[in-house]
Length: 399
Image (cartoon, rainbow, N blue to C red; front, side, top):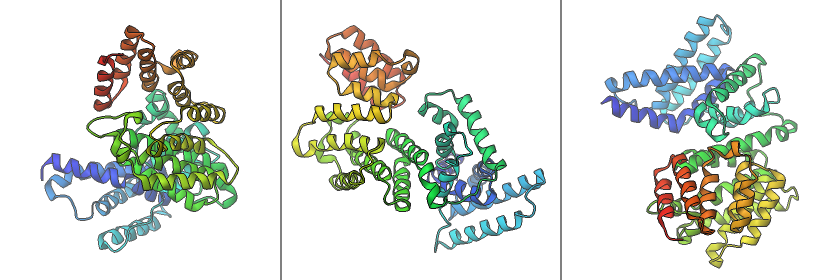
């Protein structure tokens, strides 16, 4: 096997198993940073050995074996956790045996780790980023981009949060029922951030996020915001095929026959169930916005008045930069431009959706030169080649 083929196999194993392996190792070592280091060493070993020996029949088991060795070396080097080490080794060996037998899989501890990262002892500003890194494998640079921060600042925040979990000896378990509500918002935010990252780049993270959303809802079946988040993600996921039909296709131009009607029906059922709880929140509001768009498959039109009202409600619930730019996008051009002009210049300088929306509004107003400059900036900031091609075409199209 070539080094390139081994790298592809390791990359696939990372995408499929990183979160489950980190969660499993962290729950048993009680140390997220040590688990990450051990798994990184396991992947390094895979890239060294797999080109020679071939990809093992059970890659997860191989990686867990290598990570177990790395954890053991680390514990002995630090001269800590000697008493707990035999138990840790036994638990990991049992999981390896399960995977190699192909009869059953090892325990999926990701939900447990999500709630650990949302522990009140952790800085609230670090909770969601920590979940994205520890549970879903996003690196600090990608997380920093999601939160519009510098990678170095985000990296330091994540290091401190992991040290806090280790030093405070936070219990690795799903919290008691009375503790769940206080940690839920951070967990839902992390799941949605992961979904957005996967949905934007067409990766597998969106499916993982939906699985986590379903798992949280199964744990808290009466929680309307958990219903709202799952509804929101399903509405977006239902449009995935139409969004990439022969290149990037914006929502208002998508072929509704390519939308997954069954998934949208499930999303609307969840949204109605959430509404009956009479506790309207951010994710329910965002799901309602997507439901308005989804109604186009029946009516052939989009109810822009409903969108304007829902965005106004969303801004009262969660006045994020994304929500403000979204409100501008559904407004009349002059009003939309005024809304964008009110945003702090520093916060939008590198925010691609701001420049894309501004370009569209300027083009609709006939301000061609300004629109071209805004399109150029949006293109520069977009990492997606298909989106760049779409924006080039929009910039060149007649008004």
